[in-house]
Length: 358
Image 1 (tube, helix red, strand yellow):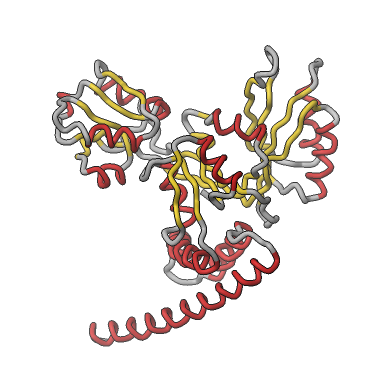
Image 2 (cartoon, one colour; image 1 turned 90 degrees about the horizontal axis):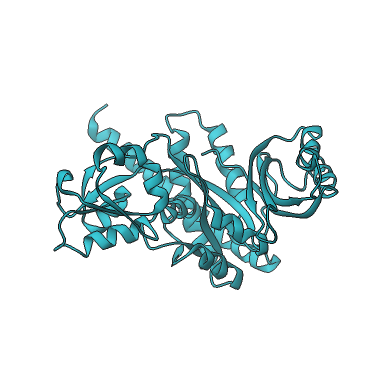
């Protein structure tokens, strides 16, 4: 078969794909009307997971699971935009890692709103100015983002989905050589994730904290007359602000990953693979923490994380944040939560949502 014939075959396939995509778009409009009639939210993480899981099981060809995720991310993003204008709040400015995580989840066809702080993300979703929000919650190296955890105590918002984003940090400047760097701008957590590299390569450089990696990149880009300054940010930030990468992937752990949460005013429906997050405060008595964990063992419920935070109500009083496998509508989970409540002075389910595959 000649190259021309193969290309003609591809053109015919593309025509069919385009026709089917338009047919799918029309069906999505109908879905939007039915959701509006029934008062349902536009983004449905349980449906997203159902579609992607089904397609991956059906797949018998050369398409990788990652390719299916990428292609259908944009198809679903466009479908959402047909149903309703949707705005996603995220910790800005543009091209932060949180922005990248939001785009990984929601694609390029929705609207994005950059917020100056995690508090503002919560506020914009709570007020209805934005439909959903994306916030960082923990890093595989540096642990929890405590401000995010603290905000869940009083907020009525629910965790709606989770996103895992591999994080690669790059040292960049407007052209200063590595040997001449005397100041480095970046977010405090980023310095922690690059600690060993900085000690080995820029031991005497001044580390200056910024609110985000994007802000760090902006500072360097806007100070072309100042010699010896650099920042640590993402590859996308170097493209956005015209910076030259002096050293790539300087994070101490090559598997460096940050987990982000999608927050919403509603709770996600169950799937076959869910996670639940909750926070509780225990009674001040011997063995109290042990007693709170027993119901999970009895229910054969796998705990995936437990984190403590000062309650700020009195000295040596703590909130415990727990993630476990399962949805709060499951009978075994309901039973465990009922038993847990007996040993707590405060208990709040932060959300049950589809567990991310990474």
